[in-house]
Image (cartoon, rainbow, N blue to C red; front, side, top):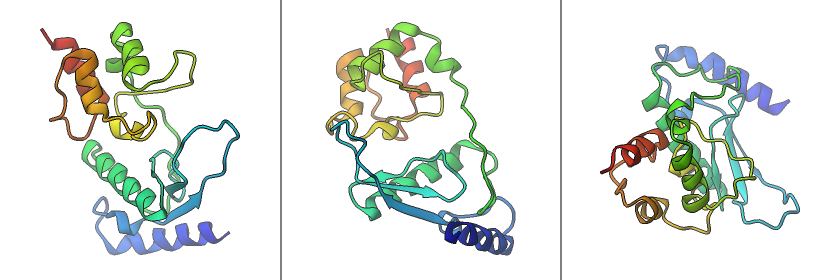
Length: 175
């Protein structure tokens, strides 16, 4: 109930700014401690999310770190979208286009296994909007930019937002 009230208040207050000019601070954020799922795997202790907007990641070992990560995800979203949802509104779950990351199955497979450290049987979804930043901490703190260079022989450190479509395109175009 409290989250619904916070979302409604954020919605009302959003009319103080011109449409689309909202900042991260305009959105209601909820930070929760994650419960163990019993698998024994390492995962961040806290999850932050914008209320009614379930698709942006915000994970961290502390509440502040989770919120900082959510802020970074929000900023990446702002940069890659012409419009952003009004604070407090429900944002429907949509799967992003994945035509670039799916265009070369061998690069996709090798990236999932050798860079991210997943088994091919693991339920991993990456899209053209996915970022290396989405997987920080998943593989024991390995620098995924450096790991990509080791596996594919391509430096992607200048793709600072870690966008996988940009990284896969660079790998495909490498000599």
